[in-house]
Amino acid sequence: MTLVRSTVVVFPQKQTHVKTLVQLSMPAKAAGTWLVTEQTPFHPVSHIWPDHPADRGMVKVNDVNHDITDCQVGAVELETKQLFVGHDIPVKRDTEGWVFVVVHHIDEAIELADGSEIELTVDAEYQQALSRGHSAGHLSSLAINKVLHHDFWRKEPTRCDELGYFDFHSYAQTKSIVSPDCSTDTYRLGKTLRKRGLNSADFVSQLDEIAEKINQQLEQWRVNGAAVVMRKEGEALTDSRYWQCDLGEEAGLIEIPCGGTHINSLTEYELLTVSFELVSDQELVMVTSVVPAK
Image (cartoon, rainbow, N blue to C red; front, top):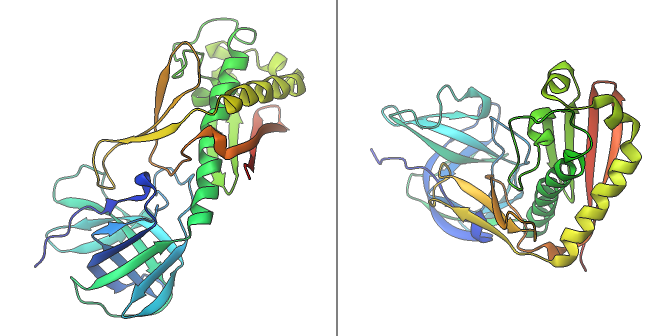
C-alpha cells in the first residue's frame, strides 16, 4: 500500500497549474468523486475557520476536463487509508498516524488508480479576487485597531496587534468571510469587551467618523505600495504560513499567521474602503471593499 503524504500546496508561490499524481480517488459522500493528489494549486476551505472559500478550476484526466466544484481539507488515517473530509475529520492536525490533505471534488463518478497522472488548473482570476479580499481584511483589521487605540479604551487591555495597537479586532471578532474583492468581519460588542476596557457606547456613536479615519489610514498604506510576502515554513498543507508586509509603521515588517492566498503588493488596489452596519447594540459588521487596480 502506497503511503499517503500531506498535500504539497503551491498556491503560496502563485502557481496556478501543476501536473501531479493521484494519491487517493474514491466516491464522494453524496455524489461524484473525491480526489487527493501529491500537489495542488487549489486553496481548500478550512473546516476549522472557513473564512476563505475554496478555489475554482478544473482537473484534466485522460485528456478530459472536469470542473472542480469544491475543495476542502481532508484527513487520512494511514493504517486504513480511510479519508475524512471537512467537518467529518475526527482528529487534530498533529495526531500521530494521520495526514492532512487537500480534497478536490468533481461531480462525475470516475475511477483513477493511485499514481495516475492528472493536471490541475486554478481559475486564476477568481483566486486573485479572493486574495485581494483576504489581504484587504488584514489591512482593515489593523487600521481599526490603530484608529480605536488612543481614544476608545478606558484602560489598557493585555493584547496588542502586530503593529502594537490594542487588538480590538481579535477580541471582538466572531466571524469573518472572504469573498471576491471583499472581506466581511462580524464583531461582538458585549459585556466581556467592555470589561476589557472598550468604550463601546462612544464607539457606536461615532461609527461614521471612525470609518472615515480607517479609510484615510487605508489610503495612506495603499499609496505606499508595500510588497506582501507569504512566508512559509514548509511545502505541505499543514506547514505554517504567514502574511508579511511593511506598512511604514514603527513596528517595521510585520507578519500575521494566515493560510490563505494573498496579493503580491498593495499596488494591486485602486481603492480600499470600509463601511459599518450596526446590527444591534452588541453586534457590528465591518465590510471592507476593494477596487482593483487596472
